[in-house]
Each structure stands twice: as structure tokens, then as C-alpha cells.
Image 1 (tube, one colour):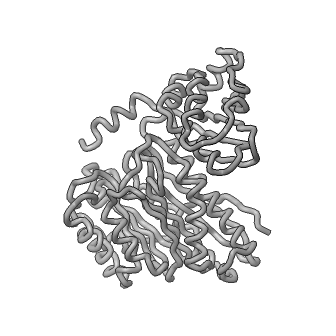
Image 2 (cartoon, helix red, strand yellow):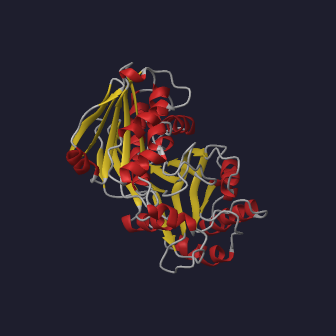
Image 3 (cartoon, helix red, strand yellow):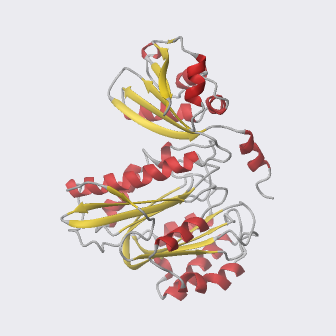
Length: 410
């Protein structure tokens, strides 16, 4: 049996994991949580991927150092301040780990650290010092504890993003759960958001890292809200082995089952971040099918969902297929015959073909409007030159995006 069942929960779903989130005072609004922790009672195998931005947060520097042995027990994360481009940034990031380690009674090098928020503002460590004990003393396994953590990593997000599944390997029930934050400054080159995944699967660090590094290519790296690759962002997967399945140490069928579960978590979180794009009213999914190779499919899918003109047309409910075909056409380093391409646009209302063999297709503007008024739009591009496919997720471009980012620091 390798069936997958979605269950309620997040990062506390897997055995042996606890979490919590509190308002420490990093954010001015006392109703918003801003300090989170995830903790495993036993040492975990770890896989992690990080932003490719050359301007990176202190949390990236410290986490890379701490996780280089592929092991960890905890992740501490603050929101409200990115701790990036600050002279004392690394010192503060290390201090966050030490504060948590002292209360937990573990080695500070077994802790990853994450930060998200405004760039270039020195991080005030005092609120963390004052609240770290309360944060950790109230760690728990419950769904509410997971939600507390998910809320504490949010910045401009409008809703929490968490998911959990259970599946079976070697007759053992395995759990995997995750949470993420991401709404603006989203254009992953791995990765432009924060995501944390926990599982009780027994898997080596090497296989976990391999699974994650491959999976981000079709999940987090296929999300774009605004084309800006951020500075702090990362995805960390912790696996503590408490499900007691036979250890996964090679690319066998059990590894494939685990990879599928990881993909389900990461795909869900990716779509939720695109849907919650700053100011967004619509989730846009672009699927490229029948491409000559996977690289081409991914490039074209991302070219379409990153087009500001396509995004604006979706916001205005304008079936302007010319903008879609244009974005296909200017995809860099893409070899294909545009005269073989067809474009369909749909939603839960229905679907219509708008472009075929290099030319527009007549359609009802009234029906088009009904399709585009829905809050989830799917663009399907048939390349008619192979068997590869890829999916990318984005959102519409609205007036509110400019309002949010025009006054972000205030």
C-alpha cells in the first residue's frame, strides 16, 4: 500500500515533533505572532535548499554552517525583520540559536535559523531573549501549536499555509506535514519563501537532500508572484525516523513513495503561496504539455506566469490571448515551432480554445468573461512537439500590490 491520505495538521503531525509561536515584540502589532520554533525530540536527518541571491540573510549563512553535517533537532524563525545586510547579522543569528539551545538543552549547531521581514534594519535581539523561554516552555504536539508556528512566520501573508499527509512504507504509517510563508518578493531560484517540512520517515540525510533538491525544481521553483528573488529564503525538511520503517538509503521503491509524499506537500504549499500573492485576487496556473523536453516546458510555463501583461489581463478579466502567445514567443533559449502551439484558458466555469496553429480562434467574449471571473484560472499550452510537461503557478497583478509595496517599511 502506498496510498496517500490528506489529514488535518501541519508540522506537528509527524511523531516526535513539537512547535509553537508567540508574539515577542519584533512586530509592533501585539496581535501578530513573530517568533516560531519547531523541535524534534530525536536527532533528524536534514535536507535544505537556499536562495541563490548573492545578497543573502544572516540566517542563510548560519543555517548552512549548522546543517552541513545533515543533522538537526530544531528550527527557530522570526518574522518582522530579515536580519539582512546588517553588520551584526551573523552574530544575531547565532545568538538566536544559542538562546534556543540553552533552553532546549541541545547543541546550538543542531538548530537552523530563519528570518523574514524588512531588509537592512538591525534585528533587536532583546524581544527574543525575553520570550524564548516562554516560547519553548509551551512547546506542544497539537494542531494548535502547529498553527501558532505557522502564524508566527507570516509577513504580508493573508492566511496560514499548512498541510499534512499520511502514507505507508514497509507496513508502517508515516506522516509528513509542512508550513510555509510567502506572499511577495516571490520568484524562486531556490527558494523565495520559507518552508518547513517535518516527517517521521526513516531516511538518510543523503537521500533526503537528493529528494528535496530534485523536488524543488517542479514545486517552489515554479512559483512567481512578482519576479523578485528574495534574500533570506529557504526550505528545510526534518526527518526523525520515528515511524520506524526500514531506513531509506537508496533510490528504491520506498524512496519513490517518499518522494511522492514530499512532492504533494511542496506542491500544495507552492500553490497556496501563489494564491496569496500580495494583492492577488486570482491564482493562475499555467500547464505546458507535449513539449520536446522538461526544460522547455518549465521555461515557457514560467515565462507566461511572470508576464505582467498576462497578470494584468487576468485581473481585468480580459481574454487577451495575444499576451500569452507573446510570453511564449519571447521565452529565452527556447527552440520550438510557434505554428504548432495551441492555447486553452479555463476555470471551474469552463474552458475555451483561444489560439491554434499560430492564429487566434474566434470565441464568445461573454463566455470568456464568465471563465475569467473565477478566482482560479488555468492556462494550458500544447506545444505539440513531444511528451514533456510542466506546471507553474502565479497570480494576477492588482492595484493593491503597488499599495502594499509602496509602503512596506511603514
